[in-house]
Structure formats: structure tokens, C-alpha cells
Image 1: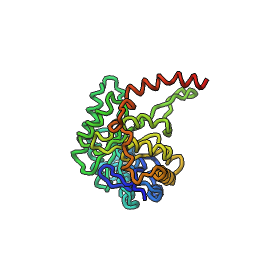
Image 2 (image 1 turned 45 degrees about the horizontal axis):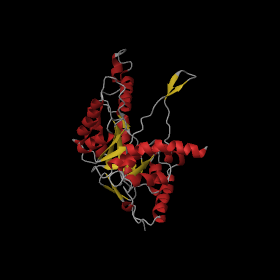
Image 3 (image 1 turned 90 degrees about the horizontal axis):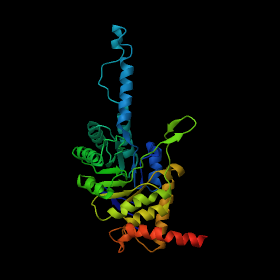
Image 4 (image 1 turned 135 degrees about the vertical axis):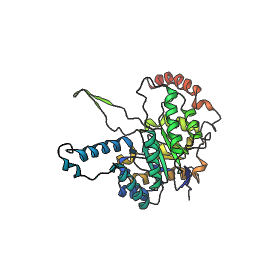
Length: 337
């Protein structure tokens, strides 16, 4: 029997396979299917503060429409403080999800204001989430903002939320830092229990027919695994924060690669959107088969075997490997010719 148990954010998980945030996870039936297929935990879709604010403004506009015309119109709607329906629905869904499945349910939050980050984080905790993922989607399009300002913003948000909630916190961060490893250690020092590497910042395309920008969801490909693979390998064993691998997981091979460089859990979204919740069972069988074929009895026997810390030749992660790749390329081209 192969032991697939692992720890993530201090939570005991039955395996390293986690269904990361996606539209798929917005339905209770899908959560049950994911649990039946072997998912060890699930991250719910993000609660977006600006979406709630937009709904609140729309609700308020409807409530007061026409009240300037007739005195009696003031009684059309009762006087209430606007409580956005979006947050109520999300929090109710968290409660339903926690009741529906035995695996840990992790909330996800994408805020825009300090008050929003703190208030909604507290509410998600109260709704029963086992942990909370902070989806820090900060794209520095303000050209006056320098790198240190971006880093400070991340840390300030984490500090504010950490001071108000007790459940474990994971930070989903992008790769666009001058020193991603140092930033990861700073986040852990400020109270992040886990790091999700990496957030895919969706980028616009250009529609040449309508002369407009086009925003669409591009599912990840296995070729995108290399950047998170690199930094998880560098961080493994060097931080107390859990490491979650995200991006490019199509099959069991990507799961194994992430574990070999030191990931505590491996998250997948695109593969589940392509193939459905039952694909989680395919990933789980593939991982078991790989471990069994090589005589490994547990994840701990393989986790981090190819991490930067444990490799004797650290050049595999650094400049020496870069030079080797470039140096070998002409020879390969000659052989192919």
C-alpha cells in the first residue's frame, strides 16, 4: 500500500492532489464528484470584492430610482444598509460546500481595499472554510509604482488579514518579482502558511476585426510547468511555508515532476476543466502507478529528491545549466541535420 498522505497549510491530506479555484468548483455536485475521484482538498472560486461593490451600486441605484419624483416613492423600498447579495451567496456556498464533502474546503479571496480584504476574510473564516487563499492579483500597470512598492502592498495585505483570522493562509503569488525567492520568504515571515506558485495573470489578446482587446480564458499547457518547477525546487526545504504547485498539470507526469522538486501539494484547474472532475482519479492512479513501478512506498520517499537544496550539482538550477543548454544546441542541430 502506497502512503500518499501529505500536509498542506497544517492540514492532513489524503493525497497531494488539490482541485484549485475554477468555475468547476462553483457547483456542489462537482465538489462531490471531485471528492469521490480522490481530490484531497478543494479551493473554491474567488470572492471578488469589486464584483460585490458593483452589485451593491446597482442595487442601490434600483432602490432609489424615482424617489426624486414623488414623495410617496420614498416608501417603495424599505430603508436598509446595503448588504451585497454576492457576499451572502458566496458565504452560503462555503457553508454548503463544507457540509457536502469531507475534504478540506479552502476559500479564495481577491480584494481591492484594505477593509475588504479583512472583512471578507473574517466572514469566510466564520463560514467554516478550513483555510483561505489570498488571490493577490496585482498587476503594476501604474508606471510610477516601483518594485518595492508592489512587494510592500503584498505584505501589507497579508499583515492585515493575518491579524484578523486564525485559519491557515496561503498566498497565491505571480512570478513577476525581481527576486521571487526572497519575496516568498518575506511572505512566510509575515505569516503565510503556504505559497501557491504561480498565479497566471491573464493577458489580453487583440481582435484585429473589431479593433478591440479580447480577454478570454486560456487553459494552461504542460510546457508552462518549468517556471514554477524552478522556484519550487529552489524554495523546497528552505521555508516553513507549504509549497503548492500550480500551472501546467495535465497528467500524472507533471504531478510527479512537481513532487520531485519538493511541492507539498499539486493543484490543477485546466485539466479538470478539459476532462471533468473525474479526471482527478486519472491523476491519482497515474501517481500511484509511477511510485509503485519504482518501488516507492510513500510520497516522502520522493518529495524533494531533485530540489536545489539536495542536488549535489546546484548548477542544474543556475547559470551552469544555462551555458550547457546553449552549448549543446548546435551539436543537436548538427546531428538532426
